[in-house]
Amino acid sequence: MENQVCLLTYLQSALPAIPINTPPKSGNTTDRAYKASDISNVEIWDDFNLNTIIQSYQNLLVQAQLPPHSMPTSPPRAITGEDSLRSKIWE
Image 1 (tube, rainbow, N blue to C red):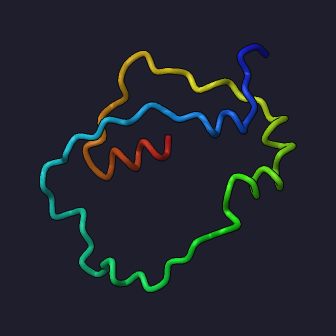
Image 2: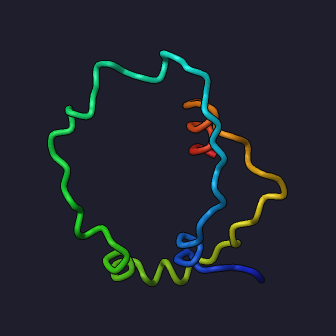
């Protein structure tokens, strides 16, 4: 299996940026029932960091082998709204 990379390397590789076009104005993207002030508590998650993850899962992250990210032959489709973003996330 040539050109394989370990899972740790794979997860640390940055993907190409996704171009974003401003969508036409629509009233369908805001839910007035929720607002930023509804968030009452935000905390730092100290245990969620690279050192803790490596300490817990190093064997798996190093032993699991995957093909490297392949570079697309053409630019990715632009994201123009919520539906196209949702579609991209679920690919």
